[in-house]
Length: 425
Image (tube, rainbow, N blue to C red):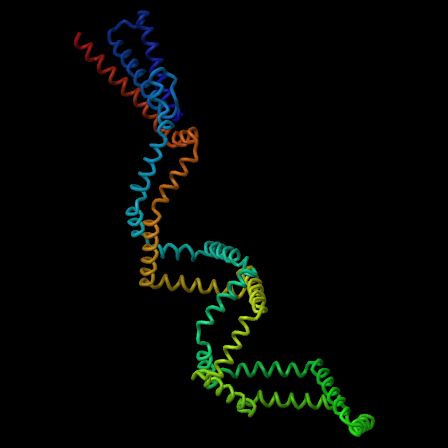
């Protein structure tokens, strides 16, 4: 009914004009006062038709000679209308001053914290971050990336005085005992290696080779060795077991005694080497430089970097699979810690708010023209019919009241004029 108010008002006005005009002409209504009623319906009809034309001329062409060129106003003036809307949006409604003023009224950090503290919102936000990281990590195993990283690594490492830095670090670590954990790892690895059956097989091969080499030196030695083997005087298998047992005892002794001579001797050698590095000893520095250059110039170093990237990508993908992995638990705990800190620290909130608002204001100032471009592009994509339909859909109902008001006001003015005329007769 609301969309048809204008048409209904025009039909009522015109029908009333026709009805009362016929009744007067047929002498059913003879009192002079009925002329006032007829004048009212006549003026209402004229007002209704005038406003129908005015409203319709905005949206479509009216096929009336001469005046038709002044109809379909929106479509014919769409370029001027577009620029007017762009100007209104960019310089009035969404001007930098308006946006900055609105931002100054909002505590953005508080809103963000409240949003992220809700479990569902936090979960969705983390899922978005997970997807972004996975997309970024998709090319981590690219050979091209490995080559670029090697180039960057080689360039950066060439600019660093690694020898002096390494020397200072080694000295500090040895003196503080930080290296004892490395010793423990080395000793554990050595102990496992001794217990490995392959170690005994390798040792037996070496002993057999040494015995054969010893026997090849002379016939007497070969004969003596033969007698020892056949009489049981020499049993290489027993010798291998004894050697491995002694080595295991030695390792256990070194593990349980931080002051073991072999550990002290190695520590002193490392300290001496570290001191030489820290003080710029050329020979020691050259040793480190040669090692680094050997790694960076080695053709296999690029393959090694790519393999590390492949493993890193696989690990990262596995860690991002769900929220229960150590990495995701760490991220979630850190996120909640940050949110809690922001919530309880007004000064931090103020600093972050200031940074966000300054950043947004700078971006708005720099890219403000893009708002107008977006509005313009959106309007350009619409053809004339789509543009007219969208505008009519938004304001068409209100324009019906213009037509209704035209009929009502016209009718009242017609009645007033008729009353005045009748009073003057």
